[in-house]
Length: 381
Image (cartoon, rainbow, N blue to C red):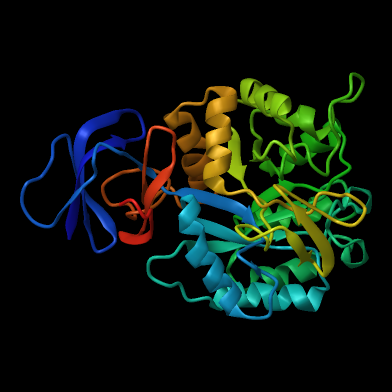
């Protein structure tokens, strides 16, 4: 048991200044509006204590990918992500031959977490049930028609938490109903759906849009498409890659001003080159060139990102004027609620997992705690 003193604690509705948080057995045991003098005490130095970030769409990092044929890939990703403030994530697959997806989902199901690393909350299955003309960087040759029996097999592993698919396709509504029955988050992505298609899917139970604006129909004055649906249909939440590349900065501002932080979930959609050098990598068996902050296929198509969660948070703060509470909502609270882990993650509250960050005024991460264990600490601490 230990206590972090002299911190500004960002609770769900307000901030405690110069307070303390006590941790025991990986859980938040006590929150006080004053420092604690006895027991093991850590000086928080007036920093801000905020919930750990939750990345619900990430393919890889530090040279590893969820589709790699080894659980070592998942372990290395989980070790690396606390550096950017991520304390839990959904391991995200890419469109691949069905046997490869079977094995990837099985690996995620069998994964044993490592203390002091980001927790894998489950699998996000992106594809293969998507529109070929909206494939983006998803391998076109492995795209198939939605198949309920295949999905039943994947659901049997008990680890699928989200599925990105194109609801307008043949069997799309049947797949949507099956996923709803199993409590899986349904997300339209890599889709050629028009506004009415999305509206119809929402009436059946569609919950969100995958990487808003990318691989879907944008706004036109005679057909507002899936992006217009995100703005107009209040039941929909939207993933957002805030790198200024997948979505331009003016569009990020427009989305924030229109949708608001209540319905945005910040993600990275990162691939294996994240936190590495420029060079040549792979995604779904395809060659990807990384230069600066951009990853592309040979034809120029964006191929995931190298974005870090804290970078996206800071961009939303500086570009959109988002407050600490706003970015906490987009990067912690909304995903925790959407994916059914709000009872233990997504906010600073007694009884929840001690997943939290110590950050400065600019949201630069000084330390990351994963279930009470330090997963990352700056050299200056």
